[in-house]
Length: 458
Ligand code: F0G
View 1 (cartoon, rainbow, N blue to C red):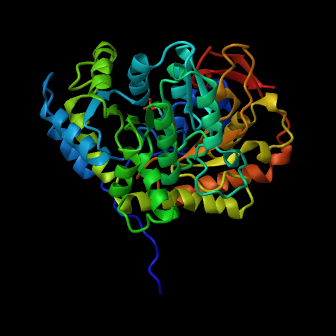
View 2 (view 1 turned 45 degrees about the vertical axis):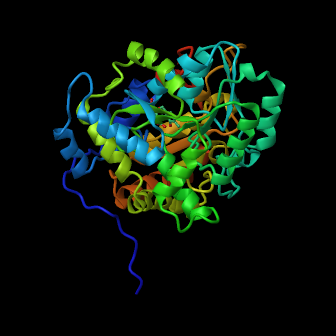
């Protein structure tokens, strides 16, 4: 008999989670104004809100915590992290930040001014938020295939080079400070970008002398997909693939809470010393001195170790196969999801799940609420709420995809938990025709509203 696939780790420490009743959950979600961010974590049984900062650190990472050097300047932990970043990504200069959006804040303060155009594949919401906060514009150049959830395209994170060139031709170069490639592309469903596309984008950008930065939160998962799906990479190691990916970038922002498997942290990597010097001023202003910038020494140690572990093939295979394990069950049941399965999450196509609801009814949020009531499983809306209103017209933006994301924390849940999640969603699918009304907003913030929005039944 062939031996079955099995996890590349065993469990040394456990954290209890609690079941609840449907009646309790109905009350709790009402009290939370139908916003799952407002739930207390002990009101949630399986928490798939995010894979960000929710992973389990390894025994090596915990040991590194004990070795942290908390010196204000020149700490050994800073140099440990600097070496790990240089070795894994190839960037000689870096600035630590407390998380990914802080890296965006520092970098964009240096590079982006009002009226600028920032093309890329579907920008993540904080990235877009930081661009629009500066009165600049994010232009999505993702391939059209990404917006058809039924298509099984291997690299739905790719940029359409014609769309990108169209943008580069339409504006003076002085108005396009950078191109941002998000690897993997969270907003289009945790979908990877091919090496070929990264190479082509860089080549095109070079013709216009525009720098390319990677939003790298899930760069290692992207490398795994390149290894598995792209011709010519099957025999390369994840680290070799990662180095080649970053060779097509001038710099990177990183939310270390994802592929570096730490609970908090981020950084910016640069090739250019001049840009690093400029960004340093903002880093000191917003984050802290350059050798810690928002992180403690112990956290930098754990992050350095996490960068090595996060780029090991066995770890990545365990992780991505668990996501696919959940995806396969939903697929077999006929539940509409984004294909192929994402690296960090399964994205349920809420418009096809609940076609009877009007787009004004916040369809994916409605589905997220139903799943919570069904099984105490918390996912997150990646749809109209997340898309915010158009800053110029004030009107709701209705994105092509209205998704419920089930993000799987790293090394946290077992496949029994995945079975439970799948069964909960199947139960909602069985009673989908009974869900006749959506939600309406009663209070919202002007930007990044999904975190604090309040809703009621429409
Ligand atoms: N870029 C991407 C692609 C992200 O997914 C995130 C965060 C960020 C940047 C910002 O990083 O949270 O460390 O400030 N994504 C989380 C998520 C929040 O749930 O997908 P951060």
